[in-house]
Image (tube, rainbow, N blue to C red):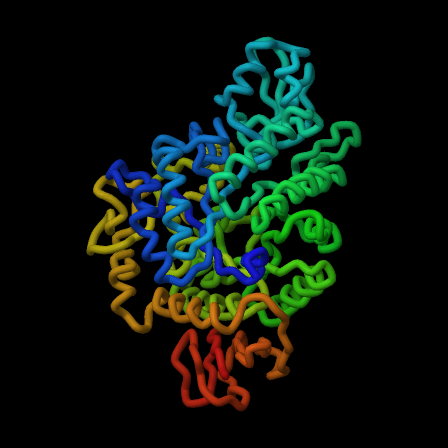
Length: 510
């Protein structure tokens, strides 16, 4: 049914700045994305999610939004964004955009008005100003309060360029209702809600984390859900990071968000017991609510999966990023291939971060002078940050910029990516890109929303059957295992030896 397209969708995350450069200035843009829409249609995705494309000083890669109703001029124009939405729809691709409700930009009209108006003014009531700073710490490192020239301090849970909105203020609530209507009216199909759990603040409880998952945040999303439901087939997906599944589930109640990102699965190590526990817990959390799970292996904030899975510790932790830790990329690549088929076979929706389908590794050796992530500066140059997973995509050719655009990319691409370009992989039947194309095609016909039935093939194997009759078998143990009885192998992440599945390999059977 049209209103439930998102329940089993394969959604491709576009980090616009690094996807494709249409005008040769070294930065990805809407012109480049529009030219590459046939690539996404051929890949077989149902929707794209774009990171913020709004006017921004880019203090945090666009998550410092200056105007929620416009397009950053480096990326294009509002008219071009509207054409992109229409062109994507013509190819059967839905469009999800990022909305950042916790904070704006210190260059925004609202914040500049607040600075000019002074203490006690209605303009300052849109943010959190105080005469004395609190002791909260910024998520990016350092204090979460910055002083302005008249002596007051303002709250920013992230960078100082990102002042937090005061969600007790009716003006703030109405502003974001209008932002949602603005984009829904232009045909946007879904909203990804950045930092969804931290909008509401409690300064009186003495809790150093007095801004995460407070009860009052849910009324905001019930309000947004009512608005989205008025448009018929729109969806809301939350970025909700915390381990308490009971608290997590509250965001998925029938009158709140449609879906939320499954970061437990993303952070899980490549270990059979841990992965099965994560899958079972995810399904158990979602099923009573009638909400579909989502399955995510990577995004613009975490080290790329090929690199993570090649490390001695394959888990993910924002507090211990292990940037630059040694990685066996051959092993990581095999595991990433197997994980892709595992994730795509699970019931619900799946997200693919751009470059994941190319098997791109993390770029750990970006020159310090070129790093732009605020985590790098806020940590006193001790945490390299997230630039390594945001390096522009390689499309074609033997040397940088690999068809990304005519100019020098905003972050440098490794020379060895010549083997990982779309052009090189399209001609290779054994490539990661070929695997993703085949998997997404099969997934559209046989997988997506639904349930699974586990099959016991031993402690090192995850195996289950879906309603369509497709059986997914992933061998996470050290030794080859015999496949269960089957008619044929639809797809495998690696070479099979007759009916034997090697280690770190997934097969789809019918």
